[in-house]
Figure (cartoon, rainbow, N blue to C red):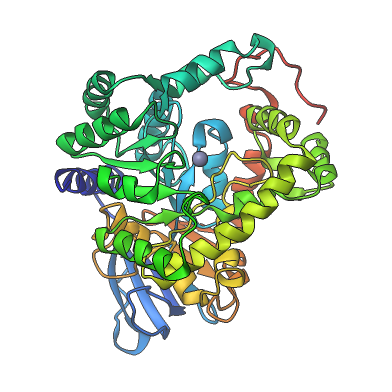
Length: 472
Ligand SMILES: [Zn+2]
């Protein structure tokens, strides 16, 4: 599946061509400790020269000249990282205002894992043209679902349908349908194919084979099939993945299995934060959706009207029985993810934004915290999984994921050392997106603008446009 990688890189190059003006501005960040994520040790008192949207130079301040006319930013005492990559979000559900939340939290690339494709393409064009502040979007298009699952959704009474599912889910009922749909999607500017539920094994194989022919990677849920079947079908990436309990193999057998995934380069995006969020006390989850003024949860002030509607539905689906089930799942998911990491399988950072009590932008920092606290990674290992390693999986290693000359200037400037404490990734002094600097004051203005964005007051996507606005 090589062809698509070139296409993705082509897209990233096209981004720079659009955003670089004819006379590129030069920005210099001087004096910061650069954590380049290349494997090199941190470089203290470094100078980073940014011309247009690209990194033009990185080196010790003593030997790195500052070009004439450059805008100088003092980075003394600060830490510079590559911008973070969120590997699992549903931006359609979080709505357009969430794009600002990603940037405000230092997330400069987002892989959308299922959404309203035409709308996402529109937002991506606006971001590229500089008309909207947002991260680089990598888009998996609509969800592929089993025909049975779509039929089940259609049976829900209209008043219970919060999500306009016809706009983001496609029914695939047979191998023939799989081939036809994959061919039709392949010409629609998408970067991956996302599967969620699959009709049967023959359809699953047909989706993977047709995607391979089109040079598209297949990613997403695989809970229906055994890990062996996933490997055999050639699926390229898995999310929320763990060993089914019916398998019940020994630890050594599990490690052997994950080694085969490692050899094939198939990563898992475990989205631990999603499962942990679902285990919060029911009272908290109910309070959060009713919390119009952000008293229970300050980040609630930035959520779109649609996402809150969707969260309300998710709260209704939660029960103490379901939580008991999830609690027993948590231990297995943690065990398996730790073993995947131990076996050399790629574990990447994503947070399934749009799930209840998971906050766009902030949640990636929560996930990195769990990589350290629960999976036992070092802060450096965790950071690699939100920078260099996902960049490689996205086929964009030449453009993003590290701080090196020639790469796109997507950067995160911190006030405290994230290698001492992973929680310090939240202490943000500035974010650079494609060479454009957003200092702390600009990020605060961005957050304030999200708080009053139109989709905060009005559900501008779902079925119920007539729902009255919340009291503000
Ligand atoms: Zn998801």
